[in-house]
Image (cartoon, rainbow, N blue to C red; front, side, top):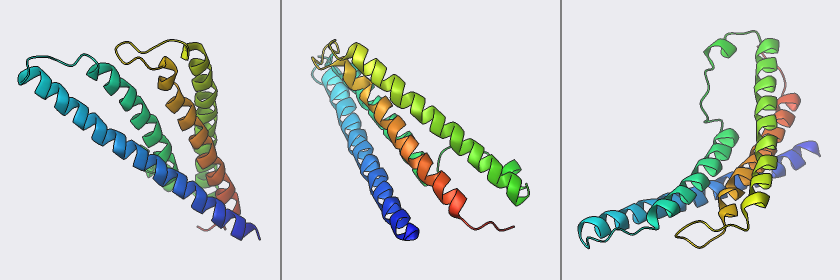
Length: 165
């Protein structure tokens, strides 16, 4: 029964990671289009669109935090594994668990502080865009929640996995 639930939970988290990467990918295309408009406006129309910088900053924040969470899920974040992989299995497992717990803690802090930042900025507007400044904090909090979920899944799987050396 546990394997069935873990399998289903893993598929849901994988789908969540895929969706997050899809959103980040669409935002990357939008970012490229926005900068294309900036170049066209500046050099062809001789009228630089003033909103581009603020829109680009907002989009980059979303891409970065969604991408970071997906990197945790897929294990593609920056890591130096050479020392850890040379250790005996119990120490290697301890290092993996410690790193995952540290990431989980970091994700929880991100989620909470992103919420605090959202709460403090939601009533202000982003200059030139006319939308809530709180939208810059949403991806911080959302990325933190995703990191916590992905790390919890990693920890559960780590403890249920048979040890080998």
